[in-house]
Each structure stands twice: as C-alpha cells, then as structure tokens.
Amino acid sequence: MTTRVLVLAGGRSAERDVSLSTGAAVSHALDESGSDVLFFDPASSHPPITWTPDQAKTIIDRLPPDPSIMQVKGLPAGVAMTPADVPRASFDGVDLVFVALHGGDGENGRLQALLDTCGIAYTGSGMAASSLAMDKHASKRVFVAEQIPTPRWRMIERGRYPDIDPYEAQMGLPLIVKPNSQGSTVGLTLLKDKSQWREALDEGFRWDHRLLVEEYIAGREITVSVLGDEALPVVEIIPSHDLYDYECKYTSGGSQYVCPADLSQQQTERVQEIGLQAFHALGCEGYARVDFRMSPEGEFYCLEVNTLPGMTSTSLVPKAARAAGIEFPQLLQRICELAVQRHNRSR
Image (cartoon, rainbow, N blue to C red; front, side, top):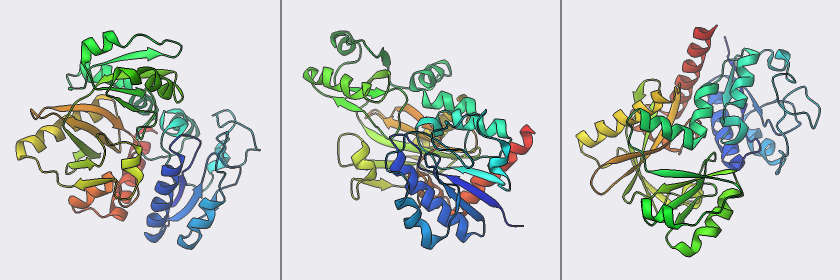
C-alpha cells in the first residue's frame, strides 16, 4: 500500500527559505521511495499539490515570497491556522505529515498541537517538547536542573536596555546576544566590544521580545544528531567566521564539516551521552540535533536542541546518518516510522 505523505514547508518564520529547501529535498526523496507526496506551504492559500521532481522548482517559485498568515487546505485567505478553524477533513487521505517547517509556529509547538487535535501522525517531537526546545531560556533551565553543562546566561525583556557592565562582570567579553525563540542564528550578535551593546540589543529585539545574553565559549563547534534513541556520529563544523552564523550555514563554502569529528573515543562517547541526555530531558522524540561548543579544555557545553533541523541531503543530520551507513531516503523512512509508532502509542 502506498503511503500518502503531506510535506509542510515554507511558512512565515525567518527561516522560510531554508524550510522550502528542506521541503523540496524531503519531497523528492519520499517521492523516489514510492510515497504519494503532497507538498504544501502553510502560509500559502494554495491547496496541497501533488509533487513530482520535475515540478519542484515551479511549485516553490510560485509560493508567496512574504506570507502574512499560516493557512491550510480548505481555508479562505486570511484565516489563521488554529485547531478550531481546521477540520479533520483537511487531512483526509493523508497517512502522515512530514513537518519540514523551521522556526515560528511550525516548530514552537503550535502546529504540533493542531495536528494532535486533528489526530494526525507527524514527524518530530510533540507539542510540549517542541515548545520547550524553542524557548532557549526554559530549555537551559532544564539543562541546569539535569546537570547538563550549558553556557551561563541572563535574559532581557523587550523595553529594557540595561547597562552592559553587570553582564560583562559576570560573563566577560565576548558575549552572545540572541533572540530567545529563533533558530539559524537569526538576530544573533557576537559582541566583542562594549560599543556594540545597544546595536546588538536592537537587532535581537527585531526578532523576539526576549533576548538571551550568553557566555561565549571559545573553541570548537560540535553537533550531535539523535535518531530514535541513538546518537549518530558526531559532526564538527569549521565556520569561516568566528561563529557558525547564518551566512556560514547557508553560503556555499561558508563552512567545512568533519564527520566523524576528530575527537577521541572518550570525547565522542561523552558528547553523544550529553546529546542524548539533553534530547530526553526536553522530552524530544523521533529525531533532533543537539548543538555544542567544545572549550579548549575539552569540556562540552550544550547550546540548544533543534527539534526540526535542516533536512536537505547535505544538512548536518543526513551527514551524520550517512557516516552511520544510513542514506538519505532510509533516514527519512526511519523518521516516518518513528512518527507512526509514536502516533499509534498515543491512540
């Protein structure tokens, strides 16, 4: 029996373009594997469209470049996507939703709550874990409670422009200033000089009403992908900038990737153990990516858990999976299987 999968990609977050790339890659691989794939941008008024490899560019090019509202099949333009507004019939004939959205309402638990209400199986973590992981301040409080090493931090609410001196005294310079609930380093500043303070706050507040001022950990950029209950081979990211910022992530040649990372067996096992611990501490399911900084002393500091990481064939989770002998189509199949298993357990 052919599985019908609805791929949700695009949306209205700051990571829209990255999401469309993920959605195109996922749709293509699932289509090639024999699934009946529907591709849909929740921010578009278009109904779901049956996707084929030859149609990919045409479909993505005609999606709205600057959507203002999330919508789904059967809703008129301008109607917000809420459980009350989306009937179960919108998903008739769909066996599984592959969530390829990044950031915003696609990753913060709201979409997951909607799909739970509609009784639809979907990939990734559930509502509670998605919400918690997106809230960096809340997730770091869990890390501290669970004795998971994480950089020191303080939070600032919009409307406050405190003096930098207490933050510098507590954590030193450089400092990281970043939105509390954004991904892909959107709105992030590596603050090296006190003169940048006000500018860094202004940039962060463009994207969120809460900011984190975080201790900067000099050293190496390390990430651990989790699939089910397994930590995949570790990836080291070597960015061309001081930090793995948006440009380094999404510009060709902006970073180098080493997988498996050049770590000792003891270091590899340690960071994988912490990655799994962080994944479970937030209640994540299915798959995720856990990001770290490794200090010159060899200590690992957990930055965050990304519950819907990029999933093109060259993204970090697929790189780690490939190093474990799992090719991209098999990785997606496993993610779909985990989603169905979780859905069946909850029925």
